[in-house]
Structure formats: C-alpha cells, structure tokens
Length: 178
Image (cartoon, rainbow, N blue to C red; front, top):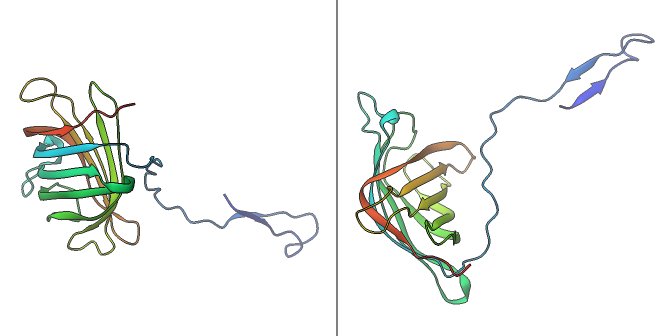
C-alpha cells in the first residue's frame, strides 16, 4: 500500500493517511524455467471439464502438439488448441503457438512438460501462453494425462484458461535425464 502523509495542509498535529493505490486482480505468475533439457513431447487428445459446461459451451477443448529441443538447446515444434468451449473464456476459438520461448520437463514416472511463448488467437492480439502437460499414463491404461493452459492478450488480460484430464487420446512426454 502506498501512503502519503498530509499534515501541514490540514493544520498542525493532524496526520491523514491516504491509500493512493488502485486495487487490481493479480494475474498468476508463472515460475521461471530452465532452458530446453532434451524434452520431447507429442500427441493429442480431448480435455473435458464438467464444471465449465453451460447451455452453449461443451467444457472441452482439443490439443495437438509436437515439441522438442532443437539444435543449440532452442525449443521447436507446434501446439494447437482447438474446439475451445469453456463457459467463462473470452477466446473460444483455435489458438496456435507462433513462438516457443521455453520448453522443459521434469520427472520420470509421470514426466511433466512446461512450455510458454507467443500465440495467435482471434480476439487476443499480442497473445501469450503457458502450457503444462502431465504424462500420467503410457498407452490406454492408468491415470489420465492432465493438460493446463493460460492464455493472455497483449495487455496482460487472461482470455482463456483450463486444467483438466485428457478423456480421449494420449500425450507422451519423454522422460528427461534428471
């Protein structure tokens, strides 16, 4: 809180503290990640979130990705999220990664992928994204994979987000050496 003492204007011995800040919702801060660490990820599927369904939204989205660390440790690949239909998202169209700035993963038993960068989406000029995928199963058995993303416009406003299980499909994240 920023305060300012205004005493002399009101008379000797009088102190008035004013809150000069405005209250705005704080967007979540994504942790800084390391450089590409031999991560390879591919696959896709449909994510379904029952709590994001209403009369005009299915509460689901489809994701396809193919990512890896290229020469020199720079991330390369594709990410596409389509059929986005969440009850409280501003953007309900396909979005694509245009630049992948960070790509890393951690874990061996359930490798988890973290990606962020720039994207293209209608109604979101200056689009930026953060994506997380937990590869919880190998093939058709086990706990479903989980996908989470945040999508911001160039002004920093959240325009779409989701976190949920892959109900159809599979995303593979190659375990990293560490």
